[in-house]
Image (cartoon, rainbow, N blue to C red; front, side, top):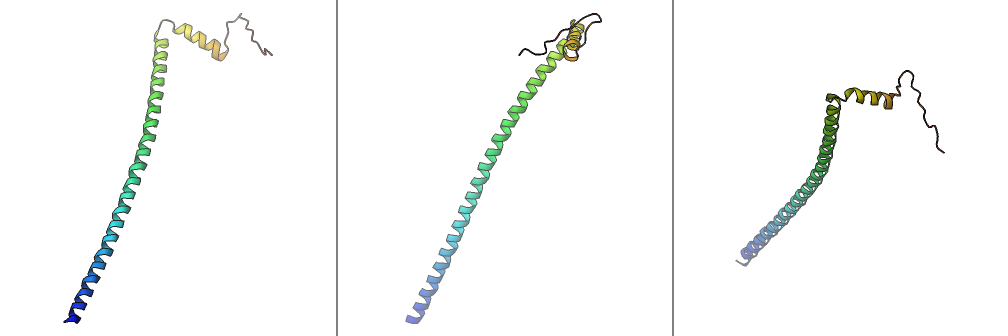
Length: 109
């Protein structure tokens, strides 16, 4: 009977060791999963912040473009369109009236 008790105790001891080992493996697996999930959350937050900055930049570019467009629309639809065209022709393209003489400062130093 002592032999069967020893065998039974050994069997119970082996089962406890197996449960303990499987419990440790399960705990490690859960910890690894939690670390991975935390990594994913942090990386996604960083990506969201980056994309929000990019969105703000694009919105500011849209605002600037709309302002420029409104200014061009105002200039072209107003009564001073011919004056605006003359100004652009003179300033950007160097046009002049037939008998007009233009003088430019070549160097100030």
